[in-house]
Structure formats: structure tokens, C-alpha cells
Length: 463
Ligand code: 5AD
Ligand code: SF4
Image 1 (cartoon, protein in one colour):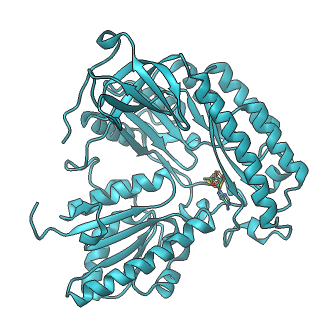
Image 2: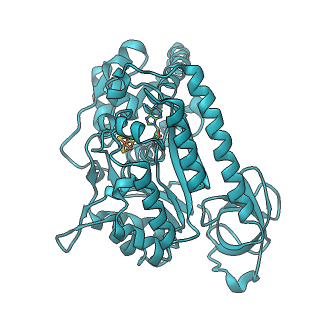
Image 3: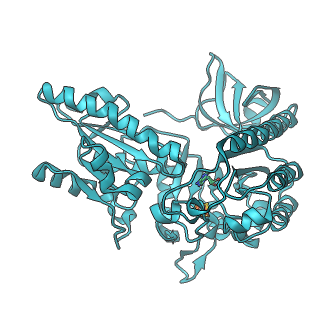
């Protein structure tokens, strides 16, 4: 690294796919000689990788841009340049509007165009004019990016890997089909190659990402289109890869092959995020979810039959237009009948350009708040109960980092809970067998059992 190396600071908002995209932008920029920094003050390029899913998330970007605008001004006084880019779903949805609202912004580019960062930056260097790139290009961005991961990227035990992107479902509340575009599955071979490269670098657990991942139907070498269940089985053959996860799924696409994988694929972890949004059939219909509450529960029953210990998670929206007290009670009943290990719940937020934003029967804010707090109370009690149910149980923990205290390691359970392990003999990247001793607010504490005999020591040297 030289003194004069340019530095980029990338700030990520929103979902795991944005986290993955930010890492990939880091790879593209590294290929151009940039160093990636965690310190905005030393950056020559700042990229905000934004989220448009709810109004709050989108508005955060503008307040952040206000701060960077000030920094840019101070820099200019010192004769140094700060280039500001807005990427991600706000960039895609608002395009030119961002430059109008925030004149300090130099580059606006959507989620499908970040492989073009080198061209964008060099065009900007020549033209010195704000550039907005929000087309959906015909080429596959993954073919135009450096092979992952970049050699100087920090080593990690877990990694995300995008296998599917975009959505064709058009739920009436959701901006994703507009910001991420139509559903596209990456070919099987490219996914396997990426996964193998990650494993070669020490990754032990891969979470496959897609907005609608269980609709995956990627092209395979046999000329067929493979389902997600088949893809997971193929990935499980990679030696040294211990754990597989995937997110996010739609209830209509939980096919039998995927459900069987939860029974038969030992590397597929017993955790499933399956958003239902509401327990009321009237609301589900207005949301264009295209399934009923009973159909969702039917899917849950099938999954539980295949994998009885599976930890379930979901997303909920309260106060969707027209939601009555009875509709909301139907959501509460569904939650009670399923029993979730974890969940995310939100107040409905009208998004420009989506059908639900135009619906007349919007629910007052106070009603949304009251419903949200009741729902969250119920969901929190369920997640506490799930943590409690782990007490005294033995399970395998993948160690991801040192613990907070000396003599402690931190990892995750098969059910995705954070676990603090008392252990002096293992290291990062090891899979250790533990017994759960105590339960915290959001985590578990454990000690190793069977010491080295039961574990797979594979301590990694950190780069
Ligand atoms: N308002 C509130 N929540 C929303 N979500 C998506 N769109 C909206 C919206 N307009 C939630 C859904 C989805 C999660 C990622 O965000 O629950 O599953
Ligand atoms: Fe949005 Fe998910 Fe519905 Fe697609 S399936 S429109 S990503 S909520």
C-alpha cells in the first residue's frame, strides 16, 4: 500500500444483499487501486449503498448526504477532492432527483450497474458533471466483476453469495420489483465456482442470497434448470464447506425438493426465514401475496415434518391499508399458532409508485404504532422462549471471532443465534460441540463438550 493510494468509504443500509453488493463494490474499486477504509475522514470516494424499502430508510440517506456535503466543502478548501456516490435502491428509484435534492452528489448508480464503476469514475474525472446511471444493462454484472473474493479482503468464516436477484411477485406494498428488476437466477456453474473460491479462502458457512431465492431456477451443465434444493445439494459436495443457509423466501415457492433438502442435506442449517406479512386472508389478498394464511401454515407443517427442530423466522407488516382490528388479530393468532424463533416487524410505509400507496383506506399512524408494539411483544416473548428451549442442549457452534472476554470465543448456533463459548483450545473457523449453559437477552452462553475429540479443529491464520 502506498501513501498516495486513493481510499473509498462504503456505507451500507438495508438488507444482506446490500452488504454483499458493498463488498463487491469494494472488489471493483480494489481492482482500480483503491483501498477500502472504515474511516470516512480519510476517504477520497464515499459511496452510500442505500435502501428504499421503507420511507425511514430512504430518508436517512439525505441526512447522511448533508453531512458529507459539509465534509466535501471543507476538503475543497484544503484543495482535496471528495467524490460522493449514491448506489443501491434509492439511487435506482430516485435517479436524477437525488442530484437535484443533494447537489454535492457526483455519481448515482443502481444495483445493476456497479460493475461499471471504473467507467463511471473515469467519465466523471473527465466531465466533472454529476452522472446518473440507472439502466438495467443487458450484460450480467457478475461477469464483469473481479473474481471473488479479492486477495486483500479480510478473511472471514462466513460469507454471503448472491444466487438470484430481483422479483416478479409484485406485492402491492413493495418497491423491490422496481428497484432490483425482474427475477434473474445465476447459472449453477458460476455459483459453484464462487463458493469453491470462498471455501479455499477459509469460509466455512455460506448464506445464499436472493430477494426471492426459493424461486431460483438457474441453468445447469445438464441443460436443465435446477431448483434451489438441487443447488444446495450440489454445494453440499464442496469439501470444507460446513454450513449452508439461504434467504429470503416466498411461501408460494417452497417446493418439495427444497423441503426435502431440509430433511436430507446435513449441511443445510435448521433455520428458515419465511415472511408471511399478515395472518389475514383479506390483507394477504390486498397485498397480492397469492396465498392464504392456511396455505402458509400448511407449508410450515410440511417443513416441520421434514426438519422438526427448524427455527422459523418471518417478516410482518402492520397497518397495511384497510387492515381492521380483526385482520390484525388474525396476524396475532397466526404468530401464536406458528411460534417463531425470531422475526422482523414493520409499520406499513407507503412507497411511491406501488399500488398500496394509492389505496384510500390508509391506517392512522397511532393505530399502526399500537399494533406494532403488541405484535413485537408477542414475537419477543416467542424468541425468548426459543432461546430458553436451548438451555442444557448440545449443539455445534461455528466459531467466527474472539469473544468479548479473554478465554471466550463467539460463534453461531445452527439456529443462527449468537453463542459465547468458554474455550481455550479452539480458534476462529473451528466447529465446536458445546452445551448451552445460560441464556442472555439475545444470545446464548456455552462451554465445549468432548474437547478436541468432538470438534474439527481448523484454526485459520488471519490475513
Ligand atoms: N412498508 C413496510 N414494510 C415493508 N416491507 C417491504 N415493503 C414494505 C413497506 N412498504 C417489509 C416486508 C418485507 C421486508 C423486507 O420489508 O415485511 O418482507
Ligand atoms: Fe417484495 Fe418479497 Fe413481495 Fe418480491 S416477494 S414484491 S421482494 S415482498
